[in-house]
Amino acid sequence: MTQQEALEIIRMGESVFLTGAAGSGKTFALNSYIRYLREKGVAVAVTASTGIAATHMSGITLHSWAGFGIRKTLTSQDVRAILGKRRYRNRFAKTRVLVIDEVSMLHPYHLDMTNALLQAAREPFKPFGGLQVILCGDFFQLPPVVREGEPPAQFAYESAAWQALNPTICYLEEQYRQEDTALLRVLNDIRTNTVTEETRIPLRTRWQRAIQGAISPTRLFCHNADVDLLNRRELEKIKGEPVLYRMTSRGPTALVALLKQWCLAPEELVLKKDAVVMFVKNNFEEGYSNGTLGRVVDFNGDDGYPAVETRTGKIIWAEPEEWALEEDGKVRARITQLPLRLAWAITVHKSQGMTLDAAEIDLSKTFEKGMGYVALSRVRTLSGLKLTGMNELAFWVSDRITAADHQFHSKSREIQEWLRALPQEDKEKRQSGFLISLGVSLSTQRFKDAKEKNVNNKTYLLDEIRKRHPAAYLPWSEEEEGRLRKAYLAGTPIAEMAQIHGRKRGGIIARLRRMGFETA
Image (cartoon, rainbow, N blue to C red; front, side, top):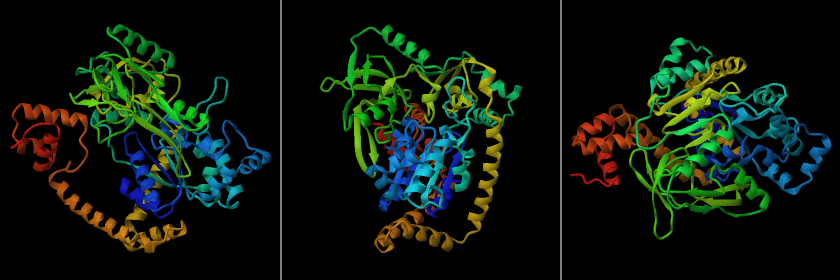
């Protein structure tokens, strides 16, 4: 299923499980729907299983949003106590759509407790009190955390609430991260538990193999202790004066503490010239995303902010960014810090959701199924990977997940066939009807709808353009910019560069000018 097909289904009001392999564009589709709702004034609650995932969308953890915190069960007294607080009563009454991201890391009881609270607060005989619920994630990613001595984790789809909701499955099958067919085959073999000797061959080519480029790759370890030790040692090796950047904050102490806990940027960031860093926030206008690697090459004499050179040679002056926690459409707390952290090493868990330019991965201490898949799927190509440790557990995912995934795939194909057979007029009626049920006045949307129709017409035109220029109007990756830079400096004609990159001649010229090159 494509992203557009999934969005068409979601806009009809269906509760959905949005899934797909790492790099299939789940977060992009999810954010598209959130923007769609907010533009129409619909109250949408954006939550996630972990704080790190929540900050990617300016959301909040499900635990905090629902008010159950660290509980594993809810008594009737607990329900009355939570609903006795005005902020939760108002929140549940106001919300029309509930988004839950990274659902793979939720225990079943998290969904069951959320369902119980919403039924008690809203409509008792409807799943989640009648809200549209969008569950997003990939169960091949890391599972719910269990303490030592506890039984193996159960998964969210095994909960009573999930069964009652019976979400429509939207399985995204396009790939936007991996650019290497050999790496994709490895990842698919791991997902299907069909790893063979042939699967291991491409990975052996990256065993202790240096990654080309001036910037050191991010090292992934399974344990925090290994990460902290290596980052500290590497920074100490660099001569020169350290520069300290302290995080600032606004809002209630408890909420600020949550943001600090969730945010990948440290409270105190110590940098030196030549320090290896990683951007930990998306800012496409400035040319970086969460996971972009670089090296500190200078400090601004006026404000002291660092200049970071990326792997492609691009210089980015890093300035403070803001992480906010929104509740009920209002910013409750915010923190400000440079969107950087030392990046000689991070944990596999913290890498979930990131796209890394280059990674040196030690999986010798893998302690749960799925960890190897998460780590290996962070990179775009095999050439951006160096393996320094591996054990057999890294090649495995849960048999239960493999079986469930097969069912998800099958159900998604069925709904895809139904959607493609559905007349466009019926789709629009269903989508309009859902908006009306959410309280959206369609009379006030006529102008917006006209604009949207115009955009759709442009989309059809774009499809025609991409038959000749496959990458036309798509965002430029750092790697692509690097190839363009080399081609320009080598004197490659514009027409040839356009053909190589699958873009229009005007797009090549515009990008070169934006990169600071003069063109005829």
